[in-house]
Amino acid sequence: MRLLLVEDDPMLGKSLQQALQAQQYLVDWVQTGIAALSALQAEHFDLALMDLGLPGLDGVRVIEEVRSQKMPLPILILTARDSVQDKIRGLDAGADDYLLKPFDLNELFARLRALGRRGGVAVANELQYGDIVLDLASHDVRYQGQLVSLSRRELRLLEVFLGRPGQVFTRQQLEQAMYGWGEEVESNALEVHIHHLRKKFFNDIILTVRGVGYRLNTGIAM
Image 1 (cartoon, rainbow, N blue to C red):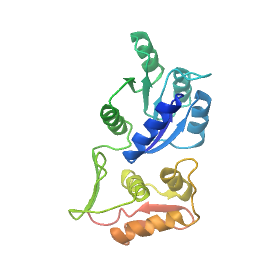
Image 2 (cartoon, rainbow, N blue to C red):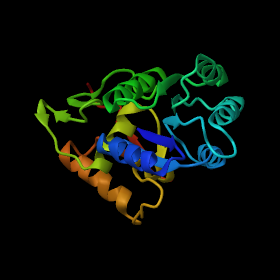
Image 3 (cartoon, helix red, strand yellow):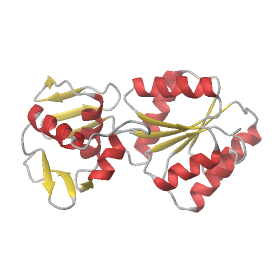
Image 4 (cartoon, rainbow, N blue to C red):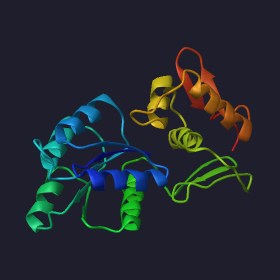
């Protein structure tokens, strides 16, 4: 799951980014409302974590603009503003959930999983394709009952394909799903990761759609 973290406090933003990355999320972090809107308009994110007290354009205004553009994006507010009016204002603007600072990280992770299910990122705590089972909470992957070791990017790639089995993904879409900002993407990196998935499971798990991209092989009997 690719997240956009919008937080102007450098220390909190950095620590949250690291904690979320340790949970296998791909996290891009911005510190202003204007930067958040630019990112959301330019790239695809599965979910946004939004502070309200942002410099310039505050979080509520960002949420209102996102909703005015009909972006189907789950939004979780993370803020120290604890008044009922602030909570109502944020939810009325279009946020899906509200978490007060300071918060327990385990509660944050649980709310992200719940929002992901509600937003269509995942319909359950597991994604299953034949004998492959991906646990979205623990990030364990099993094939024919046996644990399979995947790198962070292989895991993210598998999650993308299993989450939308009928979709053809372009190279750009898959690279954006696997790499955060500032991470260098080597020219053949995508092919290497797909090769590894084919080797660890079976060769026909991912099909090449010539001139377009790649898709999960949904023609295999489950």
